[in-house]
Length: 178
Image (cartoon, rainbow, N blue to C red; front, top):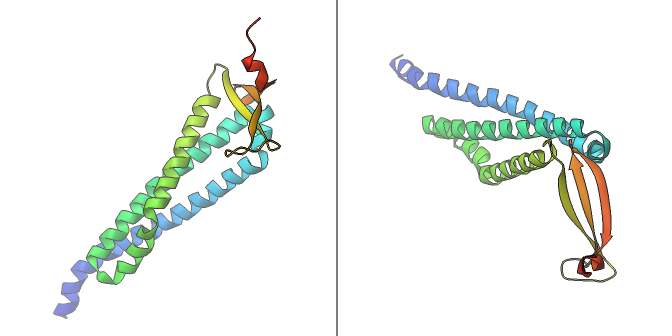
């Protein structure tokens, strides 16, 4: 009986930490499913949004960015909980190994994607028009980077969508201004 009483002091924090991991995993899985839906929407409709429904593009990109931030936080919480659980009992070392194995790589990917969307939203959601230079290569003239740059486009963005595209020959840039 004294052994059971002595172990119960350690069981409570262990169960609390284990419960925390399972709750966080359930929430993380739900958010990953929501992220998959948002990314799927961008894959299917992103070009249509960019060409004619900029408000929807901004909304989906903002939602995706928010999910990435949440998932990154949940991943960190899971990693910390697994490390705490391992300290409470060596039986849980495998959980810590599984969650920690790819943690740095996946965290870097999440933060990179979130940063990209933040920069994209800064360009799309502004009230002023943005000009983007798009360089076009020709596969007929092979270069180490893919092809010779034969044309360029001045793409005007506003309100999250393309407002205008002006495609010009690269040779025109070499001619003096009239």
